[in-house]
Image 1: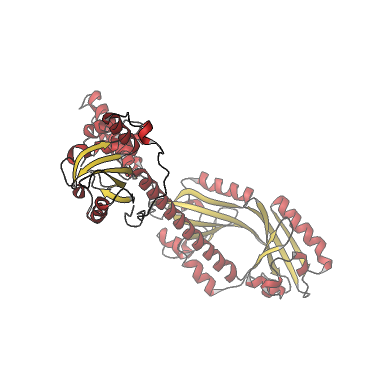
Image 2 (image 1 turned 135 degrees about the vertical axis):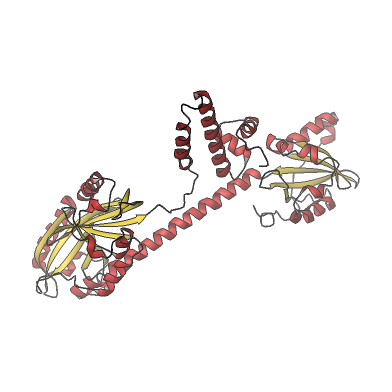
Length: 475
């Protein structure tokens, strides 16, 4: 926590104090007053001429830092970090009429300083004051977690924005005419440039309008049947429909679910030319080849039709053409079972997201990947597109203990026959305890109180474990 940015500025607090303290509190003894002060504040200091004369601490994490012993007879200003010293000087000058709260950071044995919010009250003339402090460590920890969560959200948002950008680029540069229709009201939600050119309408004249407006009335009945059939069965086609412009087109419709809503993708092909509107597009091919993720297109027999250059390089192929006609399982999947699962899911749902598997290059080396896939019906049959993203170099957000265990397990098994089982078990227990403690300290930003709670240990129990596994405080 930034001490400067989180400071509460000095101000006069409007408070409602006791109306008759002399009548009701006059019988309190000195010991009882001291007990009340200690209970009211996390840290209470008696400071005389800037020197700490007495200390009361409210909880174990502060006691563990040794403040009660190390602060006595020491200048108060020397217990805080350099940037907090002007605030201590201001607190020492405060009078009882203006009890300003200021945050300072105390030096700690751990890597993190201890943030404390203080106010001071004179108790004997101008030489002796009582400093009352609130420990802000938990608030600081919550703020750090909030910042971490915010950064995670920002990273996720950035990834989603880049993914949407890639989708928009591919969608609008595709030479195939594509329209996305809401399956509930049959209104157009998206149309790419090729569809606009084929229908001969501007984007604003298509989006939000019923899909039937783009077709002649003689074709709307078959069009409605096509969309209804696709929404029910997943895939449907109609070979001959008439646009308002008089152009004849064939339609292939496939349904998919998104955010609890069903949508239908319509692919339009020009019947008059006798071929699909998708033609050779060098610019599009170049973009596909240079996508950062691998792309594989395969047919219904699990044979590769095409791969982009990114996938060809990861598979150690001399060119993308080398993969054409090969079984998909030669390069993708731990076993043919993975490919069968992908195909069955695609046939059922039309798409797959973040399927964890592996790729295999032509020399047998493996790489961990995530696969997202979609199926698309064509005139020659259904094709399947697989987007392949490597995750082997992805940074993990949380510590993983299993990264160290396999090699350690191998080391222990090699001791069998040379070392008694009791000693092997003791060594493995110490290793596991050390890994768990290191993980807890890392998750809690080296806050030992939080780490102890996370591990289900008392503070003292954690210190005993630290000593046992060779991680004593201060190491």
